[in-house]
Every structure is written in C-alpha cells, then in structure tokens.
Image (cartoon, rainbow, N blue to C red; front, side, top):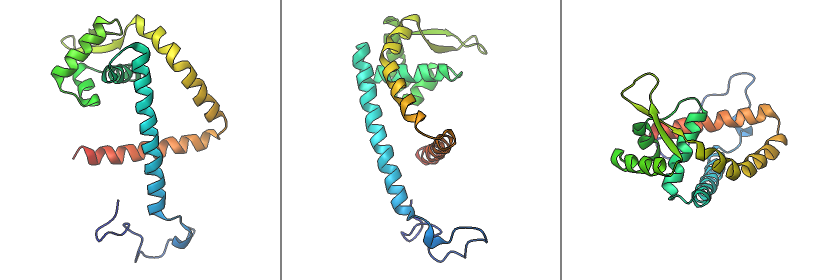
Length: 178
C-alpha cells in the first residue's frame, strides 16, 4: 500500500494539516499500523480456517462442503439467500463443482433447493431441518465466547471496529476483482 516511488502516499511533502487537525508528527506510523492490522487479519483468517475445519469434522463433511454450508447459512440469516451460481462465486469454485457439492449437502439433509421467490426458474439454497441442531451444538460455545469478548468493550468502539473492517474488506475486494 505504498504510493509511487515506494513511500506511503500523502506522507512526505504533504501540505500542512487544516486547523484543528492533529499534526503529522503526532500520527502513528501508517506503515506500522498497516503491518499490525494485516498481521491481525492474517491470524484471524488462520483461526477462521481452523474453525471451518473443526465445523467440517463436527458434521463429517469435507472442509469445502462445510465452508459452503456456512456461506449458505450466513446468507440466509442475512436475508439474502444464495443461488448456486452466487455460492460458486463466493467459494471460488466452478459451477459444475458447486452443483456436485450442493448435491452432496442436499443428499446429507443439510441443504434444500427451493424456488427463488422472484424468479420461479431459479432456485435458492436454504438450510434444511437437520442443519439447525447440528450447527447449534457446534456454534453455541463460540457465540458465548464472542459475547464475553464484546461485553468487555464499548459498543461504539465495536461499531467503529466493524466499520473499519468493512472498509478494509471492500478495499481489498475491489483490488482482487481487477
């Protein structure tokens, strides 16, 4: 995230900050902040991958099937169920591979294909009855741990952290899509 010439964009030779702004010499080192943030996100990504492997073992699924199931459930919980094509894009698999994966999840009773509410020709993916009990027993301890962590922090600070992570995610996603 360095500007042209290798320096951090906007740091050297920048005009003075407007009145009321913190002088540049009092700002934390942006490269250090970036490195610390990236390392923290990398550690979270590794722990999330471990969580998905553990979830897969809990359900006796292949890890990619568990990841797909997780994506289906989160999308459904967020009010925007996925089509098979959207799931393929989300998990980075081809449509044929995703069709086979969804077939396995349907056969095991974890997912159902239901008609799309706005387009009767299309289907959306939803968690089936079997998935509720299996996921609840797995995720309840994780939810409780997050509740304990969040209870120790000011809700406004958590909201700012979430907003920052959303911005970082959008910036990276935009670059990855190029």
